[in-house]
Image (tube, rainbow, N blue to C red; front, side):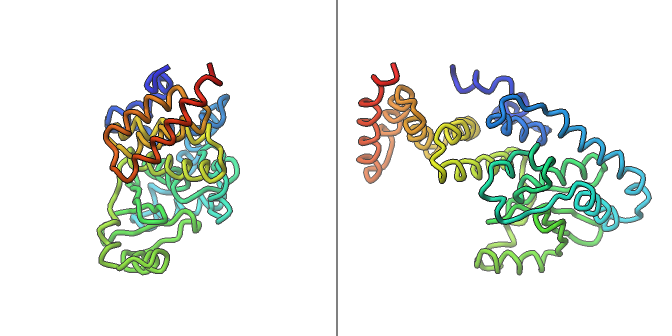
Length: 279
């Protein structure tokens, strides 16, 4: 089965692969969550988001200004849905799976942000994702200023100066480097970042089959990336798919740097040795 066939039922993910616009980010995230939960029913998550929109519609309409609308949104998501972050969240795949984030209230910055954006945008609050270094955020352009919201810290609101200062403390990057990074990002880049988080998590646990599934998606989203092709080749071998790894490694060896060639050639030898065991 080709990679495209493997994910053909994932309509929103395939729209990202085709670089289409107006992708349903919530459904795309749930399609990824289904890799680890094959029987996942999307409806409870979608219903929770619809309920949040219904509950907030009247109060938001009467709020009077952008800041009050935002505060109402945050209050509901933190008080009613209990959405928050915890640093143990980074060690749990549940916190990258959107349905589990909704069920438990716990998530990592990017999955919490996806929920915030989903509810906000249905309410006409143009909350956008910001792929800041080390910590995903959301952003709202108001009539008077740009506000940055951190769902991981229960919807903490910052102006640009506060946000840059906080990120500087977090990353030690110069403020001059951070400011250009505080721009809205695309649905496609959000999903790539979510997948990279899962890739790092599964790789750190030696859960190679799960990492391989994630890497198949990353390779489809970035078909011109040598790094993603190389990682797919290596993960195919580690996930017990040496037959796939052989052709992938041969393709990478043909174009890799001289420094990397010995490592990939060794991986290719291992794939050839392992292949008969999986026939």
